[in-house]
Length: 192
Image 1 (spheres, helix red, strand yellow):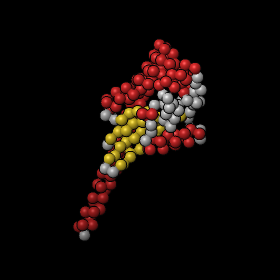
Image 2 (tube, helix red, strand yellow):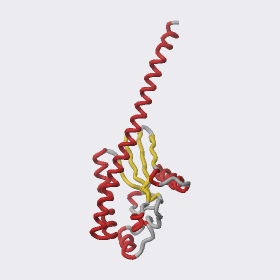
Image 3 (tube, one colour):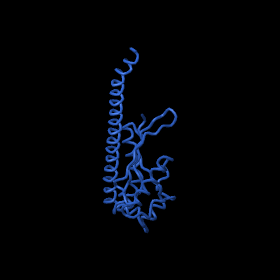
């Protein structure tokens, strides 16, 4: 009889511990989402600022050079600061080093489907805890919407821009976009 009574008196304590753990896990996920958003905002702002400076100094071809050199460096700087893997990817690659892994490809395809159904690209993001054997990672992606200025190098291109892209990215697929399309996504991997 004592055993039954102990079980019943411990149940509320166990439930409280479960609720507290779940609330903490939820807060941990919220914190990871917020930190991921912040890192992506830093990446986007730094890259946009440098591309605008490149555009002013050398026109669209200058911006292509800046993006080619600085985007990987900015991603590496933020990765070093945070201890995460920070980058960009797309279904239509310009830089083959940014090829999506299987998980990222599935999320990008989902983003394209949701965009086709009417969700604005700027509202598309996804997070998930991914388990691979003993390893757990928090993964986050946020779509990169194609803005009007992006179309200079990612829309219908020709002339000097086309020649620069052919020279720097012989296998470029990242053209033909329209304003509002999902051009790709920022991606973050946080080891847990």
